[in-house]
Length: 345
Ligand SMILES: Nc1ncnc2c1ncn2[C@@H]1O[C@H](COP(=O)(O)OP(=O)(O)OP(=O)(O)O)[C@@H](O)[C@H]1O
Image (tube, rainbow, N blue to C red):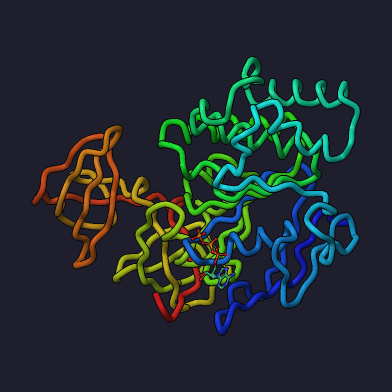
């Protein structure tokens, strides 16, 4: 039996179809991320899961039971919002204990649970602090603690780190992942930040315009994007028109390249994705000839725009190449990913 099954969910606001037949299986103890651009329907799907919004059609099944009609508090889920939604007049302890008091648990048990969760979110000693005296990162930890203390089976997180600065966000990403592994709760995490999704997730669901584009592990999504939307949205890519000659041989602009992909017909028109870090520039070796158009220093590497037979390619290298320099480019067959051709590409 599936743990959580989002079964054929659709939702329309006015005349806009926001979710279009979303069908998704979520495993127990999995960190699953809904990734997509602003407006693609991520938050709406999360709100439907949490019970804050009703789908037009489809069901939410938890351990085989239909929970679609349950109120938020009846569901085995808790939500952490981007705006921390903490009670400003209560201190840290009472913010976290709030839900447990509503459940009328004995004071001793409440105290034990709150102290345990404070340890998990690294806030031991902060019990009596007011919410206003905490930093943004600490406030978000309180809101995560407040959700986790209720021991939900599934935690829903809607861009919880969006308001934090970059350094703190990166630190919290790792902390959240560790927390999730420690508590062994399924996390469903919404973000539009592809790096965040790649860092934290077991599974990523890429959404665009209310439709699932691809479901896969971070490595699958990055290395084997299913279409040009995923290839462009997750990392940078060179997307090139090509023709499949036969299995393991693809032709780009008259140049034959070995490749690992198969399953395409002879002479089928395809698209090839090559990541900038896989574009190897050298003076002498390579299937393609070209010229450096620009070079920008990016900290740990240089980013170059190349002119390869009249098309611009992005590339990365640890050494700078001079603008105007004539170069060759080598692509390893392992780094050539072939996709079906799309009309809009
Ligand atoms: N209650 C509502 N009434 C009307 N339209 C809505 C409502 N909620 C969401 N929408 C619309 O549905 C679309 C999807 O919104 P949603 O918030 O799910 O997207 P999102 O992917 O989470 O985007 P963001 O990252 O910007 O929050 C948007 O066009 C939004 O304007």
